[in-house]
Image (cartoon, rainbow, N blue to C red):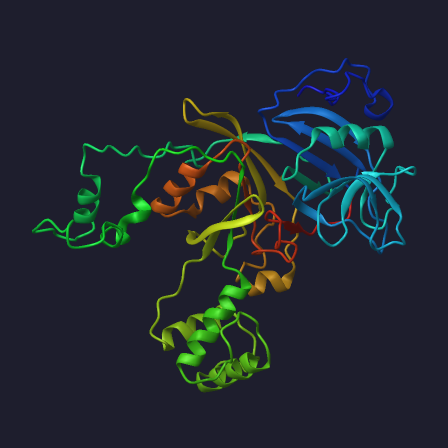
Amino acid sequence: MHRRSIPSALSAMVICATLGTAAPALAGDESEPLQIVISLNEQSLNVFRGEDVIATSRVSSGKPGHSTPTGIFSILHKQKYHRSNIYSGAPMPWMQRLTWTGIALHESKQVPDYPASHGCVRLPAEFARELYKETNVGEHVVITGDPVTPQPIADAVLPQPEGPRQYDPTFDQWRVLVENAGIRLNMNFAPKISTAALLYPVRDKIGFARKNDGAPMRILITRRSRQDITASVQYLLNKLGYEAGPVDGLAGRSTARAVKAFQDDHNLRETGIITPRFTRVLYKAAGANEPETGHIFVRRDFEPVFDAPITIDDPDQPLGTHLITATHFNTEAMKTDWLAMTLENQLPEFTRAYFNIAEDAPNDTPVKEALDRIVIPSDVAQRIARMLTPGSSIAISDTGISGYTGWKTDFVVVTKIGRPA
């Protein structure tokens, strides 16, 4: 691994005091993804360009009672001269926001070698300025206990870029697609029917030459969300006449009463709580097939693009928490490599029970093992391949979509770490 100082767009200065190195400033390959990794146990920060560490710094994170959250974040917003909206307008120069609830990277005059902030990550002044110049909105910031580093990973489930299909005006592409979909054409319908209407069943399969907008894709692979599970339960309970209330994915009093009533009618313990066993009995009673065990979500530019069900094999085993990022993206060869980081995440007992994860299963599932258990439908995989862009990333999590994920964010994955030994 090569250690370099951050190249400034305005100067070639070396940040010797901050970085603890006397190496000359070297320009990194700016086509490679930039990722920031912060270790709370070491109170340190590493900046990675691909696999290379290009800068390091000390930091000061949140003190007890104001702890800094851990997990996978993105830079949401940047502001040179910001003042806190929470703490009496306290100055936060060179601010890079990680959550809309007040967590950010910023310059501070006091950066001791221990946690001392109200949740933000304090940076030395000179380093904060130089880091601000080199980062872009949307780049990942990983906050962990012990440091982690990106490692090369290869697996068949990781997508490779695929060029969009070219439309050949000399080939009756739409007729072939329609007939492949089971629609037999015995006459020329063109004068009598809208082509758009005729193509409706297969329009998503017709590709035209176009350029990607270049923004990295953000993909989340996880188990079915709690809200999705609850909504499906509400729908089926209502269908069976148990009056669970609106199908909104929120388990309120009406839903709890309906769950208890169903449990009473089917010799289940009356808890009012949605458990995997309850869900299996409910689906069977409703004559419905159980849904897929996982889900894939796609965002770009902080906005949802699409989502789809997927299969997670051996769902009683944790997937672990991983961030996998596209690197060495070759547009001409339509090929990319991938780098993976695995984060510590201690799954609480309640989470294991809710998602039916074995109590004695270890938390630290290797990333290769997790990938080998993920099955993505071919049409979904193909759609992702056609949209893939440099710097795209895949987050894998056991815990659904976190509360930090929402308006103008990427997928935020929150983790729980143990105390340092």
